[in-house]
Image (cartoon, rainbow, N blue to C red; front, top):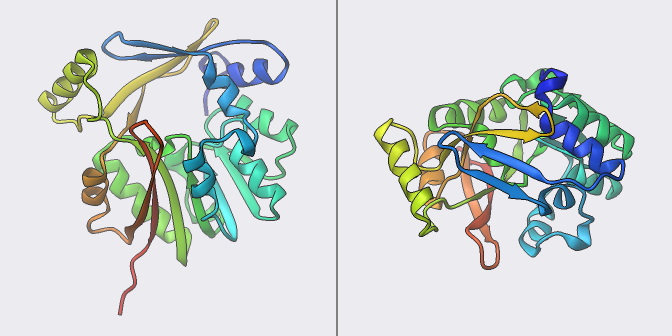
Length: 247
């Protein structure tokens, strides 16, 4: 669990929820800084303000839902309002407090690596908001996908949003891809931390993958890509993953 001084993301969400205009600052290990005013707004966006690919993707959620990296709870709360049984999880204590104050009934502070069948059995695993990235690396992705298989029903789906890191011409990003390859990492494996006021998260790995790479990650697991939903005019897409049928 993050300590209070490490919970930069949670403080950002909590302050925004309480009426403070703010920005999200994401720092990459090579010194690249991304500042987003839309970040906080998007984390609280109502369904009608979601991008079309997200509305199409969320329609695949059924039954009992596990929302991994639920943030301020926009997806969890929407599905709860649709009558689904939802558990929102995040490693940020203040994010979970924000979800609860917004009406999410079931929420748990836990990192993705500590999720297991003890928290229940699910029909849908939600990894929206690019949160397939929380798998972190190629090896950990395969390990987590095996764990997710043991936590889900035979007809379960994973709704996994990510982006294709290769759809860029930015020389700074291309140089980072090369640096990753030189270190034996996937090109889209980012080492990041979030900063807000005096708060800073620990460094963490966040993985962006192409469709070819996600197929490679899925190989040998219980999961297959059933379909892809592309975002308009951006490298973002959602992979709808389902269990393989064994004869």
